[in-house]
Length: 89
Image (cartoon, rainbow, N blue to C red; front, top):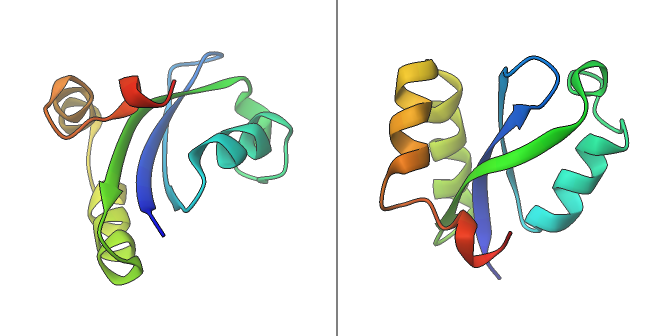
């Protein structure tokens, strides 16, 4: 089973949201359908960063690190080598 951390960007106001999932397609759909309280008011969302993690523990650790990041850090990640978004979307 694969685990992923992701960054979404609101197409409404450009803000970022960070999270983790086992299914990036389903999770993006849930955000865009309003299933998440935080993200429901800033729809639609697009996935701009996706990184595969080897296990759940590391996924959760990485998600915590992402949540402490700032816009400049996210932009570097989006353009970086770890971003596998083009393989999925």
